[in-house]
Length: 188
Image (cartoon, rainbow, N blue to C red; front, top):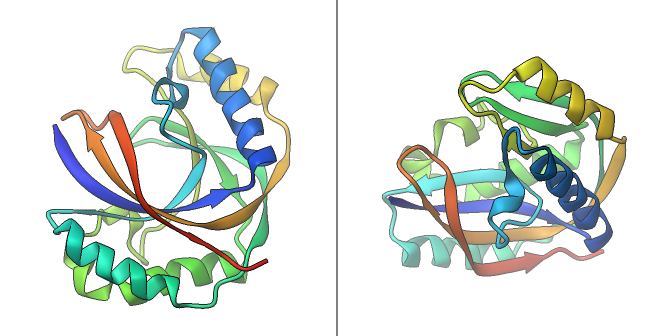
């Protein structure tokens, strides 16, 4: 097991329910590793993930982040994507200037920890998404993707703020526990 820390955008309750319904549907298919298996996980877009950094240092930086004047924004999701390296199927948001600004502000505040940031969440490689499921090694990818697309509807969610969380993972990367450390709720 390993412990890391994440900073992620969180959404309004109505959109959360839409995504959780999708997770439950995927779980009911019994053909893939749905995000619904860990109840502490809420729908989110990860902005940064850090390992080997002390929680207190990140907590101090998060307090600085909360002093920034960030605003809520509606984000639209109209596509499904696959990350080949991790076998993750996800929903992709349309990129807006504010969505990029959230990322830039987080990486500016947490700049002294950039050497500990997960490579997929750096400024150069960030690919915003909401994970729907992780395809198991021998699962039929095409069939699973077809079933996900069949249930997918174009939707939008209001970004409400940023959550700072501790994440416990198995060695294979599966998340087994998420604990919220702090939240920053944006102004409307």
